[in-house]
Length: 319
Ligand code: 8YV
Image (cartoon, rainbow, N blue to C red):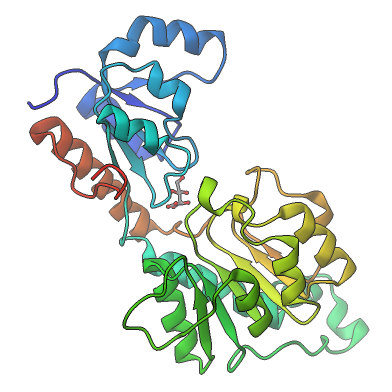
């Protein structure tokens, strides 16, 4: 084996992945934050060569510092903003994620959230279940999706899959990314604000982390306006959530479809009573098929590191 030492599981992960880590790798399990964790790290921190985690937990600065022999952070999921990649790079710690295998499911989620938000399907379902159809007559008219102007913020792998879905609905698609993406026919907007001003629906598909925190600011939401909608399948941190809550409540923003939130699993309760928002519990990649692929890729990265000292899908920062 290229790396002799213990595997550490950070965060619960899925039951089947946790089971494999326990039975095939005799993995250690990081206790919840508190005195128990400190004692655990003092006893075992020096044995750990690989940590398996997810974007929800990650290996941040403090934990990485407590693992002096760490050689790899293997993250389940495409986003790894909770892992300190700058420190990892300085220390020569490799980091992997699970790209590509979840692209279609996350793009499907963006499409589904948009259809639900503009057409009011979840709200209409609540209307029927409450027995209101015979009492109140028909449901109010909603907003057409086909042909609506769609802006994708972050035209990476997932952003492109989202764009292709909306292009198929006859929606004019434009985008903003840090850089222009060569070889696409979609119109480029020079800033998030310019993009928001030009579209009916703004779909957030950037990566999370410090570089995109608050990118969808109050000004960007204002540019979207009362007739505009925002959909987020990225990270809650990308949107100014306080501004969003205020603006969907007052009608300064038309509506929001959200799969991710600033402080998951807590969702601002002010949103619960609103019919112009659709709220999902971070299910972008949550299908049996995709989660199985993510798990397979996670275990391939772990085996690659332990056997050959190489990851299958390293992230660009530490590749
Ligand atoms: C999570 C995600 O990884 O891939 C991502 O970045 O946000 C999800 O797929 C998954 O929920 C496990 O935390």
